[in-house]
Length: 416
View 1 (cartoon, rainbow, N blue to C red):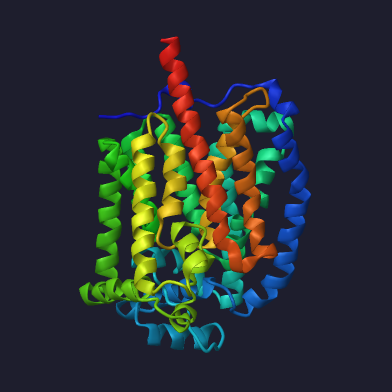
View 2 (view 1 turned 120 degrees about the horizontal axis):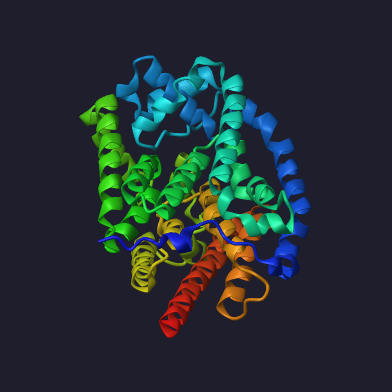
């Protein structure tokens, strides 16, 4: 049974002149120069270091190299990874382990043909192209924002701090943004099966893809789920064939070490994973209670609160599933870093498109909560140790979105 948004509701938005007088949009437009300046500052500091090997791209580069040179059966061997990173990138005390499903490494085989410095620069260009394609896919749905200023929606995509961090790090979060943007467009056209197939390709970040798909499963959108299961099965099969069953087993065990096994600061530093820096439920719990509660308590509370948030969202959803599913996937994901927040561009841009200045009540709260979340990642510059606080505006934005959906449903019922 499909409960997809009707075509009339999912078509590109009609123009509303009231957006021209929106104070929230004016504020966001006025802060764009500040955001571009902050990004330029970060690039000036980070880019030289990244070209010398101090970027997340090193792990993806080495993964592509290992597949190309017939070493895929050792892809999750941290010792081998460390040795190759030292030889081909730069010598470091610690390695960045490749912790994604191995099918993704195939994407980096072409880049591994280049020396690291040139490969890193090429990754920036590729990711920038993916970001622009994501914008182009959603552009027909951003009519009102272009009324405010022709380049406003494009600037929103280019200035968003998590997206720029993904570019700097050479990360794959922008690829996931593109995948979810394509899935959104397909769902808008009621092509649920194709949307599920596309979304399943995002399994390289399963910690985000699986909660996203689970929303559709519990909402009994079977066509989407069938498509997702099909492409996800192919991705898992290719990964197993690429590295072998033994390495896949090792991969699963290593995920435990990098998640529930992070019992000390030394463990966090060894894997480069710091839960208190995550803008999700886990990060919020760790940011507030780490050092006060035992690790076991932190794990239990994190899982329980994540389950509660997820359950409340599922019970609250009606017709509009696409945007809340992205936000809740970020909030309940066990592992989400700054660059992973790039996917929030989809609900943020589309919400700012729909929210106009003549709307009061829930829609006004929704509009301002979207602005707050868009600006919240600046916390990375102002208070980096407290980045977990970004989970609060994310939660407020999700609550406002659900409230607006309920308000819309009540109005439709009254009109009917």
